[in-house]
Length: 567
Image (cartoon, rainbow, N blue to C red):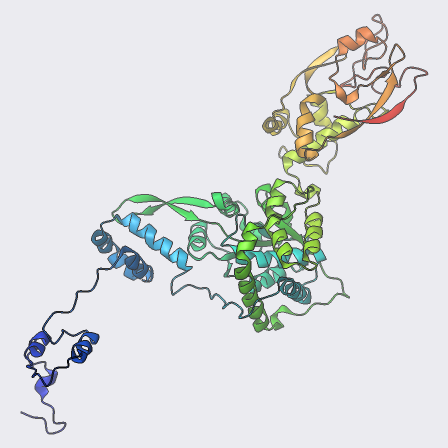
């Protein structure tokens, strides 16, 4: 029965029409010779539509999906869809669940992110970009919004350019923005950096487990403000951030579910660029600062003016990001092969941090190689803030040997441990005066801090008294390596005539031997009287300098001549 309203039978919508195989209809067609095309046009038309050929031969079966295609397909699924099918897919492919998950994760990493990634990568600039002009444009933009020194501008511009070279980077130094007080512009500079780097990710309040997964999956540029608060007491987060510095070791291992109720060790890459900002950030743990390019901020003066960053044109930053992407892509191979000259004034870790910056400056050309070198030397200049606690202790011990010498500035060559502790704690501004919970450093604390340098207290004889102490020779190697950066130290000493009238070089060059010196020069031993019958006077320091006592003067009529010797 027909429906008069539309002329279509209701049974059509009910699906009452019996479905017939398509092959049956096609195979039932009888073609006459006139209908056939000698050139095969009819056959080709059918095959082009994916239908069986007129001759009745079935279409070829589709090729089975390759493993690579399957991985690519699975990597595009949402987390929920993947969770529903990964076990069946692993069984179909004949691999373990863990292997399939690793392959899908690698595919996502190679692609950079899946379709729901929270980052928008800019399209590379259409024309080749002049590196020097681009860096100058970035530097000018920083100066528009930030009041800071030239070295800070230079280092920041180079670091932003470097952040686009992760593909070939071997080291990812942290850009550490430090300020002595609030309202110095550190947060503003970090914001400008975020406008210029690839995939900026504000990581405040992010747990370590989320952070390392985010870095492994998306390869973002991690930005953290108030780093001094974020890292406080969080050793796991600090270790994670430190691990991302060097590519060869930038991995963390975690136990991940294998889908069968068990767990499997899984490796995550945490290699990537990071920038931190904080008050006193340059005083963070040495493990952080040594992996950083540290730039200093300062509070602006009333006459200094900067534009409001909130009024900036976002399009201008988009253009610079697009140019950075193009310049990095065009120069990636050259950056990887670059071996710039590194200043000897920088230590090994500083050279690691600055090498990629100097390489980028060299490839950009113009004024930038010179600017980069000046910035490196200025920002890496030794400061007390940059010393580790161990180096600071060695420096103060060296000062103690210097300050407790004779009036002729000869170093003592032996010192009792108790006296050294007193000397270290004399300056209340030094940490040693309050190291022991507000009390002076103890002998045990001193011993533990010197142990990594191979220095241990020993029985030292000074004059007629023997106690636990140290000799100068024990510290020579540590002073050279850690206090003086490997250079031979220049020691001011005194040249004086010995008992026979010839000059005697002593001071810091050999260890004092009180008994030997007493037998050779009975009147010239620190803390030893001229005659055995006289009461002995014991001093806690030994200079061992011929013709001189601690606190006294050289033998009458002895000429003095200052000179330098290398220890």
